[in-house]
Length: 231
View 1 (tube, helix red, strand yellow):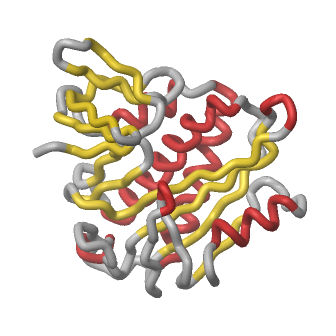
View 2 (view 1 turned 90 degrees about the vertical axis):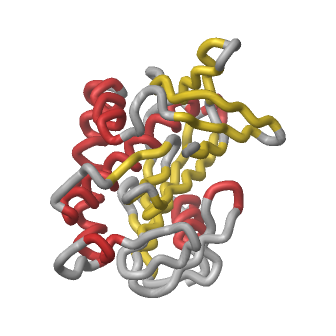
């Protein structure tokens, strides 16, 4: 398959229902955020999930964080320990400080700003680590972990969190996400286009935006950007 994202976007336009999933054993044209190539050898999880959320476009960031949290919980179950896992805003999952999984969200906005569909693509290094600075889950587990095990655990966790989000709002998800995040005061740099900002992690706000403490500038609200953890 070329890309689970592209395949599912076609199905979304054809009217596929919320919860529809496309999975591939490998991808020829997998991609990450900002159009970067996502190497997709066999042995890892590549899938896309279709949502039709009744929310405003500004709330999409919340679903990004919710998705990353669902994967962190799934990986934690396989590891038997959540201490090795860190969530890096907006949707990277680090294992022992190195990237283990990433997500990409693509959406179609209709008339009046209504979300027609939202496709969440995920890639998880389970058996193979194709990224130079990446790591795979099997390096940290005593027993082999199957792709289907991680997939099913993620979908179960996502369904639970998605239901809570619709019923109770973002705050419970926000609190759980922060429990996996780097601590307040962690040094970060953020790239927004050609602009670079350096500071420390403060928290995330009620919309899921990053709050960056910048010396001499106070707390800056970051809605989108590339975040790097500094040594």
